[in-house]
Length: 343
Image 1 (cartoon, rainbow, N blue to C red):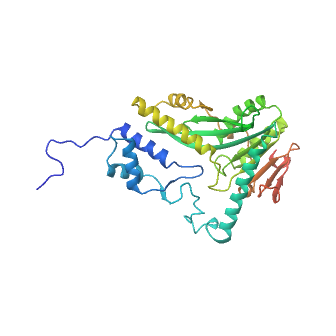
Image 2 (cartoon, rainbow, N blue to C red; image 1 turned 135 degrees about the horizontal axis):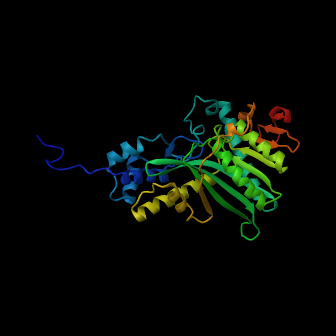
């Protein structure tokens, strides 16, 4: 009888470092993008493993890599990377996955992307216009996961060739990616923005995450800020799975930098403050740790605002009204919410 392993021979031990490096590699090659709980892989498992071993000569064996790293993730295989799950027919039973619903989904995505590009170009002509894109991503450090709220700020800048500059802000915390996190961040960031651009008009773009961005508490909080500051704020929501790539790119840069640091120094980052320190080595990136995030339930009571799910544009009126549109071109108003509704 032949033995798989000779007597007195030990199997190589899978270390935390080796496993963490493999997961970080997968995060880099097939990241979980905005609004998704899965990865899209546009290559075969064998090709993926060959890439991994090229980058990590002393890495995991193929079976271990696939079973413990790849197959444990929610993977969608597609010939087109970063594809929308509706457009690639991954959800044919959904309203947006077939027929008229799918065509409307594609048309809205096209209109929203065009509106975003045009607004970004208009920054060269509007001195007080500030364009903001926000999104969440997860960052692994050691055996833990933290949430990173990435906020990209675009503004007109006559001193650069493109006439538009941008900065990336990372707000990192061991906290759920909920509305409490977002409100805490914006409470601090909004004061800084208004100090830099006293008369700015804010245009904020995000996905339609009902847990943190597109929900009653968030809209109520922004309504309060507009009434206090008397400054213009508009919210734009990308069509599902068709968000801007700027935050995804910032997340990729941050994770790649963390991975390189761990490889270069043969270490695993287990401290969130060290994580922030490494991210801050990137140009145009600023990262901070957020602690002691208070609950919004303790700050104010919120009435549920109906119709938010259909809105792709929300405008705040200085007179206390909130206007909801289901078309970014202002052509189809869903409803107008009065002061009495929220007060």
